[in-house]
Image 1 (spheres, helix red, strand yellow):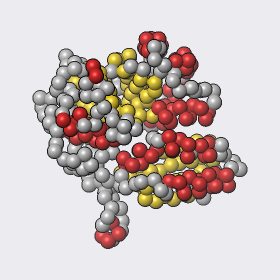
Image 2: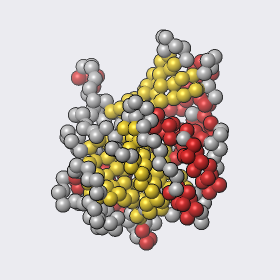
Image 3: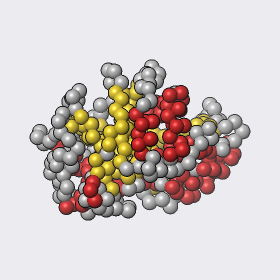
Image 4: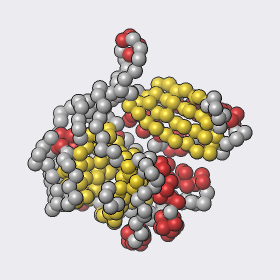
Amino acid sequence: MTTTSAPASAPLTRQVSQRVSQSVFDGSRLRVVLLVDVYDGAQQQFLEAYEQLCNQVASVPGHVSDQLCQSIENPSQWLITSEWESAPPFLTWVNSEEHVEMVKPLHSCVRDTRSLRFHVVRETGGPAANAARTLQAEPRMGDGVIRHALTFTVKPGSEPAVAKILAEYNSLNPKVDDTTRLCRTTLFMHGNRVVRAIEVRGDLLAALRFVARQPEVRAVEEAINPYLEQDRDLDDADSARVFFTRAALPAVHHVTAAQEDPKAERHALFYPAKPGSGLELARLLARQDESAADDPKSPVLQSTIFQRDDVVVRLVDVRRGVGADDPALAPKTAELKGFLDGRGAKGSAGPARMDLVTDRRSPGA
């Protein structure tokens, strides 16, 4: 693998790639669409909560503008659209504790929400109006799979018990509905941190809700509740919502270097970022993986980088027989060490190998 010499703040190459299915690092503007279903009779309460939220969001770095729209057919349906300079500042804000507290007034008046995020590829308007607006140069080619992860910590000393519980749940029916299917669920642990990576074809939100409703999943969640560092009550909607909001670990970059190999082995690497360096560390890893994808000698077949605050996890599928400690899998460069705080494997300034708990793959996925 090789590392490019571009500065950490430089956007990744924006050439058309048949490999990259997802990336937040191309520097183009972001459009966020939030579909909101408001309780009957709560429209005025929702409007007041939105206006308070809007005033706070206006000062968030990277925020450009937003609009609030109400359906002409159903007064309970609302649409919020916002524009951001690029995806990273939005993700930094939406994954922050500030955001968790900011949206609490909406909980009592909103029945359901659905968030969609898009890079802007084309738009109408004269050259002068668009001169300072960065568009995504070309469409990216995806593989139809949505990748997401959840992460949380358990009480120190409870790791063996938690691993046993997580490893023993029964596999789910992969069919969510006619358009959505669960493809793969992989769980890893490093110390007391749990990471559950999910791959879905179709609607991610529908899949997550489907999984949460299954009795076998609910039993597992209830069994690990006593071991969690962050208390939660799954019977309380607000408690569950806050927990899973804080647990969300978004995929910020994915690259596939070769056709999928059914014999590939999956590893996860945890990168302990210095405080405030998580996003730039993820950006550096994304550049390294793009460079490695052009190297036919690289053992990495595909890589997904998940990042939230200073939690950075890299999920890699490698050729059979390549271990997580293989130097080619996670090269230690001087630039990389600048973002790590030295709590990696064996106390070195490098990534830590996560322990595989379970890897469930749906037939035909």
